[in-house]
Length: 520
Picture 1 (cartoon, rainbow, N blue to C red):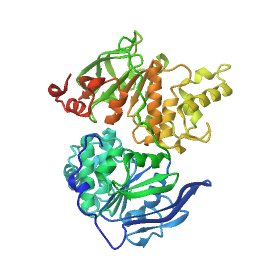
Picture 2 (picture 1 turned 120 degrees about the horizontal axis):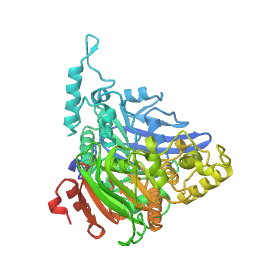
Picture 3 (picture 1 turned 135 degrees about the horizontal axis):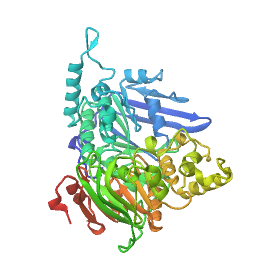
């Protein structure tokens, strides 16, 4: 990951050897409703190694993880752990064999405390009663051991996405697992938190743990892995020692073609363009600072900063999801604060960080998700929807955003992560374009092919005059897409960096509060 420096033990030193592979898959196949998802997948992974599984969303990686962790039973083939063939596929049996999984979609128990989440299944009792004091101290020690300053007595629901991710990672890796499956573990982490993750991985590797790790961040592959397996359309198309394949070759293997450029040529932005969004002295709940800035038509304004800097909270306040005080003006007219319906009606759209929690309704169809914000536009007679007009509009925006699906009635839950994100964006592109498009970590957990298509869409929308607010922890994304960047820390803007001065070091210095060395 950009900005992260792994421990030397991750990339140097001999790879552990053993009589048996820690994890072996032989001709593993799986299909759903007659559609093949995995096709004769085979590989051997040794103890004490970090192995990256690369591939686009929908390539079959998650299904493979669910088979190894006992959630699915393969239709054909076999899975072996330390030389023993797995005969029973269930999560409990997999855990008993030493398999832990950290899914991309986290599943903490939000109403419980951090210490309760960390120690679930490993409780300490005295005379049949939980020894709360001992368990809180144990959880505190676990958190401190990896440098996490999280209160063990805090409710899980009070934590942000990144902190929740680190707690879940710690929970899964603290019980001497022989095999740890990590599905995009760094997707919501800052550079500093990714370093903490890498230190955890280094300790597990040194202890002989076999790690299978999915990532869409090409820079992580070279930093942490011993081997790289590329999966496409349910097949392992390449499995090599790290360094054998170049980044370009890995991407080509993933997408089945060469990507000429991940980031499209950016549309030029004229400084004299009209101001679309004017934020003055906006005080967001939870922070002491007041924030002021403007966004012009056709401009992509980036928001940089470490996790917890206040970027998401600021975007939510502008959209009306979070309480705030101050003034937000859209096209010269003041926008009432805290009223999402008015924001949408006036032309503000938002694609939130957590797409499954707030971006899409996974239990509903693609057409319902896309047309839901604007149902009134499809009324024929009062209270009656014009189904033909609704379908025609949905089909048009699906083509424009290149959502790969089996039809408008397909449930969003059955789409890959990249296509779910396209749906979250497509719902705002029916009819007139939004005046302001708010993007909060828009490509988190999305493969390189889908990211390339989303970048093209963002650039096209800006070229058509849409003002875009982009918050991203992905440095190459922030630098290559933004016309300028505001860097935040503790809810305040630490500085502004013009396009020609954008670089990772300057952004990080401002994010860490070193404005005297980085401000322009």
